[in-house]
Length: 281
Image (tube, rainbow, N blue to C red; front, side, top):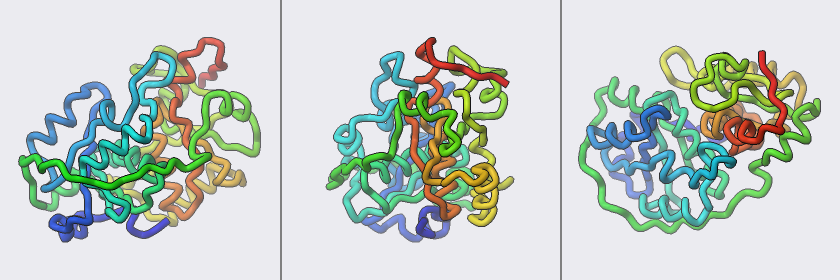
């Protein structure tokens, strides 16, 4: 992966007046969906546009397609164009929760053929802690020229997971917290547990104590241990709804490994069908 997949606060500040850079605030709270937009109104990185996880980075829910289904590429492209994204734009995404939502935008842009996208290392918390400039001004809409070109094979569906979940040649990695993976303390989805055959790597494991991503060599060692000889390209990432799953994909890419594929529906889609197998413990 390119070194600019992570951008530090100093570098971003140097480019705030650079029209070729597009900054996107994706702060969110699953338990309080309005919190991110309110936080943006209270203060954000100057020039940043705001995209909402539910409204902009997801499609409507049907009750069986997960909590955050991927939007139609054309619909998402329209959101990006309002932010001013062009084929040559450097996009930088940030949140205030260790990149847990910023990585969703990173993954989606790469899914649709845009490589020049980075995550702000340390996010909003680092930006404020370093006394970087903050604005309450909502920037005017910009005119972009983003044309989506969906990457074939970037995702898998529930049928694929069901067929290959016990296959030793594939590694299904679930990014949820260990207690939810085990089927304990499930507070979001109606069914507790995980897909049989999956292994657990909580997305926060990718972060150092300061909230920034671990060094690439550390991440590589950790993922190689988890994969235990499985080809990294044969990895499938999931979580509760296909959001923090992208955190593990991003971390693998930072480590210089193929980032694998995403199961967008994840556990929330899987458990909506009572005929699908469930494991606990």
